[in-house]
Amino acid sequence: MALSFRGTLARASIAAIAVAALVGGAGAQTAPEQAPQGEPNSVSALGIPNELQVFGTPMPSVVKATALINGDVITQTDVDHRVALMVISQGGQIDPAELDRLRQQVLRNLIDETLQIQAAKAEEIEIKQSDIDRTIQRVATNLKQTPDQLAAYLTANGSSIRTMRRQIEGEIAWQRLLARKVESGVSVGDDEVNAVLAKMNASKGTAEYRVGEIFLSASPATEAQTVENANRILEQIRNGASFQGYARQFSEASTAAVGGDLGWVRPEQLPPALAAALPQMQPGMISNPIALPGGFSIIALQDTRRILTPDPRDAVLSLKQISISFPAGTSRQQAEPIVNRFAEAARNIGGCGGAERIGAEFQGEVVSNDQVKMRDLPPVLQQMMLPLQIGQATQPVGSIEESVRVFVICGRDEVNPGQPSFDDVYNQISEERTNIRARRYLRDLRRDAIIDFR
Image 1: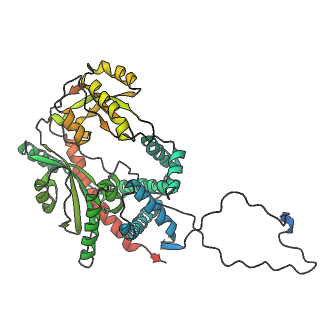
Image 2: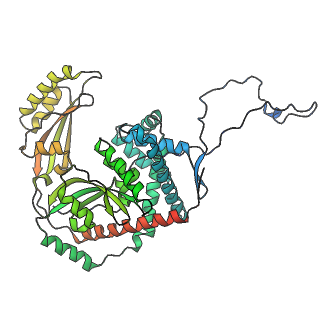
Image 3: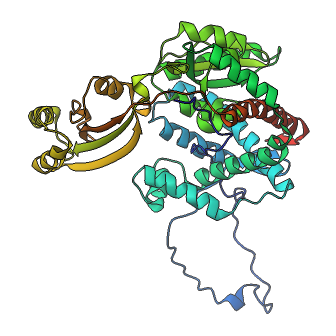
């Protein structure tokens, strides 16, 4: 199968950012002075009764500005909402001891995002509300919610839909700004692309890697602090936090928008220090911080494969998924007999045609999925499916709380890998150069900004 290269900053991530009302707190309240006898009261024409009944809930207080960035305000409420959404995205798996450091990083992220939005506006790049609405709709659909339900969920967990909309606006603005100011100035020669293709032919059978990266910039003066921050991030990830979530929030590479995903790369495409680390890692491993020119990287090895060599995990599958659910409060002891019968039925399913019969027997849901790349499935499912023949089903997987499901293989198309196209290689080289220029562009925006911390 041709190598898969990532499109330049084309996918918007959905982390979160808070934007609250930019108003100050009220001063001390005193009784209004009475108008002198005979003079009209300034509000008498409004006809306001002396006894007022208050309806609704009071507007929450908003903390004073935390920072002014070229005149735009970031409040403590903005930071709190962003932190809350970060906690949501991590499934609540944020160490309380890390919250102070997380708030500091969130503030830095908000400052960068504000600079990016300001720069886009200066270039007359318009982000329409309909653009943001479409992304919100996709996020809600992926979570099996409506946009209103998503908004209510965020509010109930200390964040808000405004934080998400602001994040989406920032990412779209930055992507379009880079397309206009950076990508248009990147050039790649045909000879460079042909040289890469020749190297790939010469490297047939050698390993390539699917890699995620979190890059933290550092200068000689900040190196020790950066290493300390990197080790804290590493500890959280190894304790179960999402690598992609931390990449979106902390990485200073332009790949932060896609969770740090570098795509499929070969060692010679990476800085020497990263290239040396990859062969020592197994899929699922996270590296220690690795020193690079200008900072440090933490890399996650997600997968490996051999260049231009057949791999059964490259197969494209046609599946039927049978899922059964349990009432809330069902214990594992109560569910296990049903799951065992479900597993036995799956072993004797009799091909894909038996999926509906089993679904009806267990009052489950049957869904067909075509064009599923085996390599995109979770590793545990890949290992189950590799030895299965068409018409066989996996063991049950899932959870009692959500659903338990089996997958029936209805078709398997083996893929014979071929050399990537000229355009694929061209796009990857172009993206690598765009990423470098994007970091420089953001650095220049920071240098020129007037930032007042309060």
